Image (cartoon, rainbow, N blue to C red; front, side, top):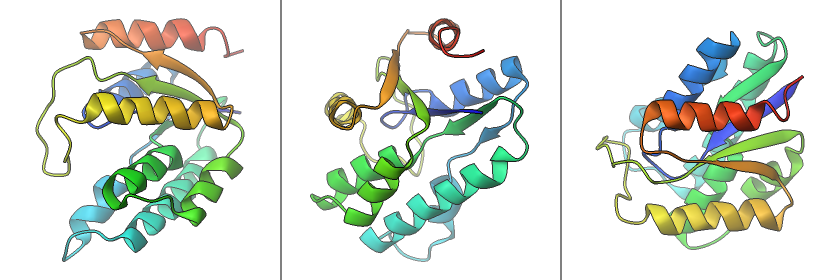
Length: 171
């Protein structure tokens, strides 16, 4: 089983790419846990909530794994929560970092912020996407994670870019 995490800054086409790859590969995809968790909160999310989100995301990875054949496609992973914690709270959370580094058997498709911003009630950083993208690159490099950068102005371009990279790793 190959675990592929589709990641990157906000509004970079991660969910769209996850759905497209899921349809093409005939494999399920794990949704982004925070999209379900944050709207259920009665107040703004806290640092402790981000730990809960990281744990929830990994729990969903495990749940969906039983439905996958050869590939587990994940619409984000703990790396995104690690980056977000740093951006939002100006620090590194040791538990989130440990969850990220312990999740070893992953391959990352890192979506570049080269498409237009799409407003969404959960999104917060329309102008910081390039800097946040650089944070993803730094984090993945720092821990020796395998990744490919996904780019292109259109959904089809990004899909083809992802497929070109996946052909190198999929059986």
